[in-house]
Amino acid sequence: MPHFVVEADGGSRGNPGPAGYGAVVLDPTTGETLAERGEFIGVATNNVAEYKGLIAGLKAARELAPDATVRVRMDSKLVVEQMSGRWKIKHPDMKPLAAEAAKVLPRAQVTYEWIPRERNKHADRLANEAMDAGKRGKQWEPSASTAVFAAPATPAGPPGDAAKGAAAVRAALAAGGATGARTPDTAPDTAAALSVAAGESAQSGTLFDDGTAPGGPAAEPRAGKTGTGTGWGPDMGAPATFVLLRHGETALTPQKRFSGSGGTDPELSPAGRRQAEAVAAALAARGTVQAVVSSPLRRCRETAQAVADRLGLPVTVEEGLRETDFGAWEGLTFAEVRERFPDDLQAWLDSAKAAPTGGGESFAAVTRRVSTARDRLTTAHAGRTVLLVTHVTPIKTLVRLALGAPPESLFRMELSAASLSAVAYYADGNASVRLLNDTGHLR
Image (cartoon, rainbow, N blue to C red):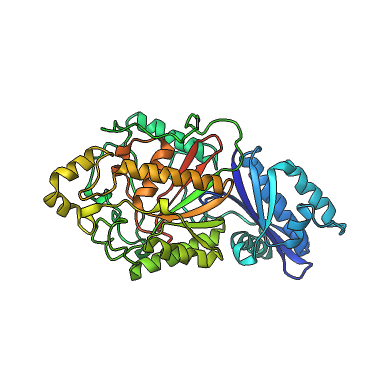
């Protein structure tokens, strides 16, 4: 069953006066705009306009998927409390509107949440556009999408159905997807492109090669789960959704040096701090994150704190989200490792079970650690949207496991500093992935 967020608002310039409403349907995982509605309704009160915005938003969600569960977010305490059944509806103008709103979707599919006005800017803007259009004697017309995040790179089914998109990716890969060779730039934690804060796209290209992985299984299923991996199945309720944020740049990032959990634990660079503030502003604007969890390493904790401060949330540290320990390779470039430890490096590239020189951590060991943390977090945050601030290898591992891709695929992904991806985990053990490839808005 799809899950949507509906944000709605209405306004009146006079109360009563010239009035209009705005509503937007969002993908709760990515913040992607799925539908927008707006209308000038003539002379009306604020409350009437707000209710009409709610009705329009619910109808837009129903058009996308009649069986969708919907979380309505509005800055009207009156509408939220009345529709939640906690306040009585006494005004004669409100009763028929509330009744109409209640009939759009079954009661069990809709929940209501009050949010501050500053977190309802998208719907507020649409309402003002509708009133402005009415002032000119016209009706509101939708403009280009203003979603904070770009549309998913995965082939999509019906709007909002990320599971079908993930299944389509895997089918395309099985039919002969990308076959690019490994490159040193995508191996270590520092495999970043140019700074997101400088306005560059965070990721590009096809991310997975569904080839055979030497020395390891095709994928590690979740313990005790028997899902098909396709995302098609009975309603499992709202998933636990992890928004995956790679930390901002450190001084080592532009130099593409191995920077794991066994090195110097560097702080964010000035560019990294700018990236953290930019992504914090973007996530605050969407308002879908309900908890913030961070790797224990300093660069992640600093990035997480920047976001948490904007959201008014605490930061919880999860040891399982730390980066790989790269042993003797810490602080070295890929070329330097190849020169000093050629045999160890080749073994590491050939098998997920091989560890870096000097007691480092194999990708197989990282997978076990990250999988354990994933299961712990999905249990603790069932039905919630949680920001995980972590590193390249844990993020790639979570994406790889969700797609059922082989260990070799870790070398086929690029993940820039402060870039975002998301994975939704369902009760039957299945998962769906959204790859938020275009983060050029984080400038």
